[in-house]
Every structure is written in C-alpha cells, then in structure tokens.
Length: 229
Length: 229
Image 1: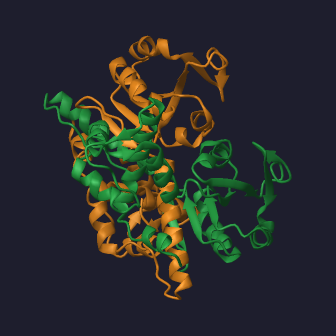
Image 2: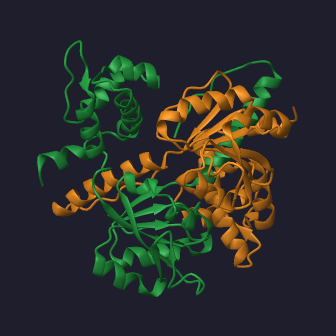
Image 3: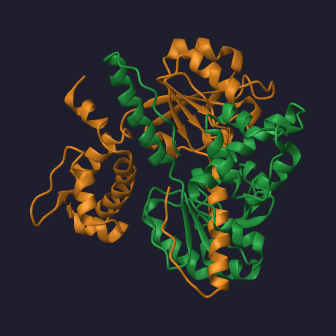
C-alpha cells in the first residue's frame, strides 16, 4: 500500500462530496484561460466558506501559493486523480430495462472513470444484443463473466422484487461494490461497498420540499431552503 | 392549506428518505399475497431498527393493529400518496445530451410522479424532434413554454459551463424547483428548491470506499461499511 492510496481513505465523506463541486468550478476557470484560482474565488462560486474549502483541500496533495492561489491545471489533475475519475473502473449493469438501458447510453460515466463493459438481463429480446455498443448477456453467465474479466463494480437497476436476489448473485460472482439504483435497501456480505443512488427517493424529497415551499409562499413567509445531496 | 399538506412538511428528511425503502418492502409483501406487515418484518427486511420504523411511520396517517401490523394495501396507498408518487408533477429537461436523453427514456420516473413533458436544448440537430416521444424545443422558447404550461420543475442536465446560466433562465421562467444532475453547485434565488443528484459525486464516493476497502482487505482487517445516500 502506498502513502497516496492510504491518504485517500482518510478524507471525511462530507469533504469528499464537496470536491466535485470545486473541480467543476476550477474547470470553468481553466476554460476562461485563467492560470490560478484562490479559495476565496472558489468560495464565491460555490457558496462554501473559504476556510472549509482550505480544510477540504488539505486532504489532497496540493498546496496553494500565497496571494496567487492554486495552479488551475495542477488542481484539476490532482482532484480528478484523487476522485478516481482518471482511473478506469470496469463495471457491468444488471437489469437492462428503462433506467439500466438509459445508463448504458450515458457516455458521461466513462469520463468520470466508470466504464460499463457489459449488461445482464433475463429478457430473451435483450440477451445476445448490444445497447449503445455494450453487449447484453444472460444473468446465468454473470459469474463466469466476472471471474474472467475481474470486474469489481456491479450496477443494480432491476425491479425491486429482484433486487436482493440479483445482489446475492453479484456478490457471489466476486464483485466488490454495488451501485444500487433501486429504491430497495439491499443487504450485502461484510466487506462489500454499497452506494445507494435512488432517483425516486430524491424525487420524494424534492416533492416534499416543493410542497413545503408552496405552503410557505401561501403564508407569505419566504425562506431559503439549503440544498443537499 | 389543509392539514394533510401541512403535516407533510413536518417530517424530518432522514425519516422521509427511509420511507421509499419501507414502500419497496411492503410492495414485495403485497406481491407475495400477504395482507399484513409488522414493523418487525420491515425491520428484518431493511435492517432498520423497528422502533425507528414505528417513529418514521408516525409522520404518515396510518396506524397498525396490535399483533397484526399494518394493512399492506392501505400502507402502500398512504406511502405512495405521502411521497408524492401518485400525483403528476410536470417537468422539463434542459440539456438533452447523453444523460438528459437517457432520463427522457426512463419511464420509471413517470411511475414515481414525475412526468417529463418537454426537453430544451440549443442543438439544431435536436430542436424540433422528439426523443422517447417527448418534444425538444429551443432554449429560447423556455419562458414562453413554462408560463403557458405552468411547469414547476426543471431538470438540469447541461454541461457545467452552462449550468448557472441555464439555472438562471429556468428560475426566471417561473419554475419552483431544480433537479440538478450536474456536478456544479448552482445558486438560485430565495424560495427555489434545489435537489442535487450528482451521479459523479456518488461515483467518487464509491471509488473512494472501494479503495479503502481494498486497503482494509490487504491488511486483513475486514470491516462492514454502512451504506448511505
């Protein structure tokens, strides 16, 4: 284990979640042709306190220059590497329905380090075909595929009544992480990473806040709701 | 304002975020033909403490029967209504690129109450066409469209260097909520709801935890990481 990787695991998750915001901000600065960016400038663009930004940046291997700030090109390189966006993480998708098929078509994932190399489904109309250039195999071939290609990440986009069963198949096949897009709370063996991204839970939160906001407006009490993940 | 809506706004966000998990669990129970479900059963399926479940359920208008539990059909109906999944919220998408186009193709959103009625872009190859049956208009027509059709929600899937500009156009058009899929931290006027769903930030968190996990495994210290949103 080298020091660089050791360090990666130490960053608190809230700091980690803010880094992509800084990256976007610095990328815009680069697009404008600027060479340096300060914490104050990032703060102005993101609305995050400059001292918080400096603290978050302390977890990555970069130091700014007094009165000049961070080197834009270096900061982009270091942030992208730290966030894992420059590595190529192979992944497969289980459940090539509406959302799964949609994710296969999102080339943006590739630019952020996720390379979807295969899809798995049980639908005979899908198996044996390709979607957006990605081959679709039968679920029965999952284990063989994973052990042959050493894929570490499985993306879960099956209906909820299949979520746990397919998760079990995934973890038995030898993967290390499940990116769970279903609204089902899957259980995994010790040591497997689960990242939940339920679009529908986010929708519920948005609807709820929209409702609250409409009520606030009705009462003529306008409040600013802080945004969150 | 009626009492039902007033109540909706009072639920703490962590409770709100757990409700879709319970809903998935109860739906499975319904599929199995069962008529009742207890907090203990939901707890066993979701791994969430039964007392926490009872507390979360106290925010919605449903009560279980002693030794029998909740009526499955009623619980599904009440949860779906509470979460806003049974209402039809019209929305448009700004930025019909890779991810935006993918979301247009995800019919799942409709089943959870989000009806995407239009897409907006500046690409002449897209404007005037339809994707998955949804018409694509030019960004210049946004304001006119929103005021005519009274759409409250805008989905943001543009490149980061357009994110703030398009957000401004959206909020000026009269929408009330922005579902932000970009990794850019957008700023909005007071009273506008922002729901951030950055797939790429989630990817970064997953990569990081996968790295930590690989290190843990190297050190033969296996730990279970708790999943999170």
